[in-house]
Image 1: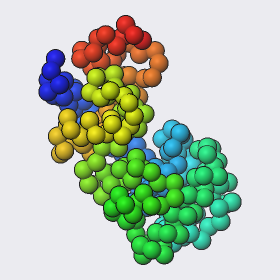
Image 2: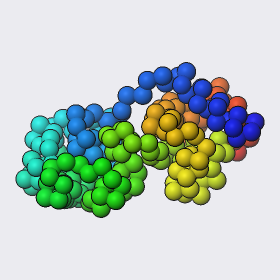
Image 3: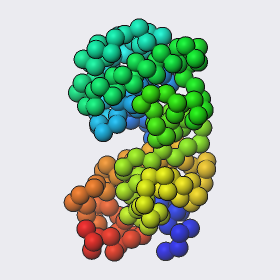
Image 4: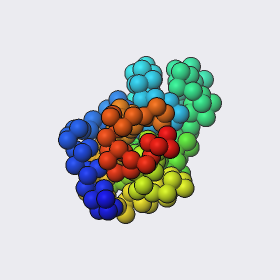
Length: 212
């Protein structure tokens, strides 16, 4: 298959399986989405969603979160891991958003990535899922699958994002990155994956199974 044929096959297959792509992290505002994404680092979405209701009852705006102590934040988010980094980050980004951005989450990569605990992937998720700006956040699932599908060389996530944006139409990015994540979780896990389940890889890169 040519790269163009692979792109069409991937898009059509994922659209059939996942015609709707609800955002996996529970939130009711761009601020709560930002906090949830920060918490999701090296943590499952399910665990984040089990923790955020209590956190957001305590503070669901930047102004309110800025007033909460790091210790109180840490006590709630501890099940998500990386507690010191995440609690200090949430406190710090809340203070900056309150003081510098009038309580509103900024809508540029530059301003988002200047916030504590916010890297490019987190900023991309907020830009995509929060503001609707075309973005292609690359997590471990996307990096793994696009490498398996020979759509990128797997060198690093930065290269994977660059290749994904080059190959897939811009208007599909926001939905497609979620579809790939869903597919990675259900059909193409990091270990023990099978051709009868992972039909996309079996179709476009059958050699991958011999290596697995």
